[in-house]
Image 1 (spheres, rainbow, N blue to C red):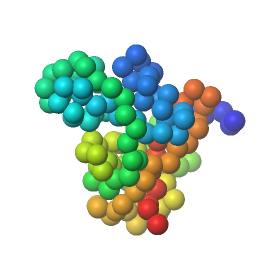
Image 2 (image 1 turned 135 degrees about the vertical axis):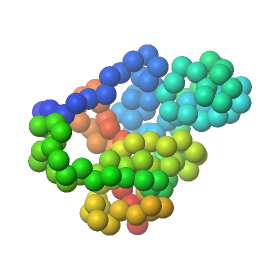
Image 3 (image 1 turned 180 degrees about the horizontal axis):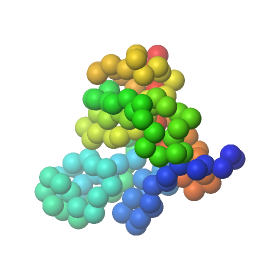
Image 4 (image 1 turned 90 degrees about the horizontal axis):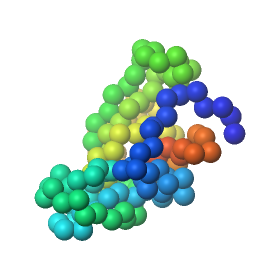
Length: 135
């Protein structure tokens, strides 16, 4: 595996199951066991404030909600990727996830574009979820 020099997410007890699922190339979210609300990793449900949750696999499909294209180098490790996109994907199940869209030119990104999750194994511990257009 090539050395990965970009910033990596911090794995915590609250988000560890999310990253373990990504490593298996699965997208999993927390579901509140009291009200059913799906969410990104959080110790508490934003809808009913319950602390009872379970991890469930979701479809990994969604639509581009919004995006920005980065042209300026803010971190040296990203210089070779300029310009790149940072995109908010509205998952079919509701939550929105920030990621990159791959296999698509930045100028071809559109709000509402259907996308599906793909995974990039960047280190032995971390696999990043990214999205590509549905063909």
